[in-house]
Amino acid sequence: MSSEEKYDAKTFKMYIKAATDATRTSPVAGYFLISFTVNKAVEFLRQQRNKGQDDPELTQDVQNWFQMLEDLKRAIPPEELQDREACRKNYYEYMYSLFLRADNRYRDDDYAPQVAQEFFYATIFFDGYSTFGSNEPEIATHSK
Image (tube, rainbow, N blue to C red):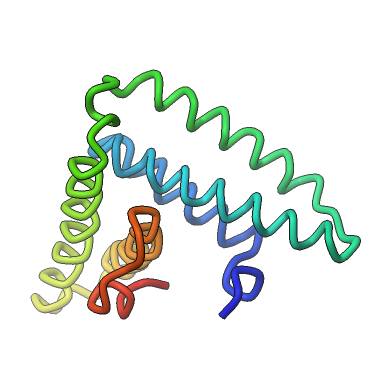
């Protein structure tokens, strides 16, 4: 599936919402998901422009998200972003904690809308995990 088929402006906004929520407990995971989303949105906009289409609202959103990314980068101690493997591990742990929390609640017969949202956010983070390289088969099956 091409990036164009998988992503659109609404999807990018959902990814940013999930990333923003994550920054409260895992700024590093939020940072990398914002970075992933900005890169995908720029790629999407480039493809749209190549077809003669323009999306000024998404373009403005991407500029805002880029600023959000820069602000977050300044707020995270530099040493936390320098070790790529530590960042990958931090992201992975956050991603799986979302999934496991939702899974445990579901197994306990909790069908609240928040459980569905946790599963949805987990799939977003599974997708964004590709920022660290190709997704392992197990992770790829959980991504959006």
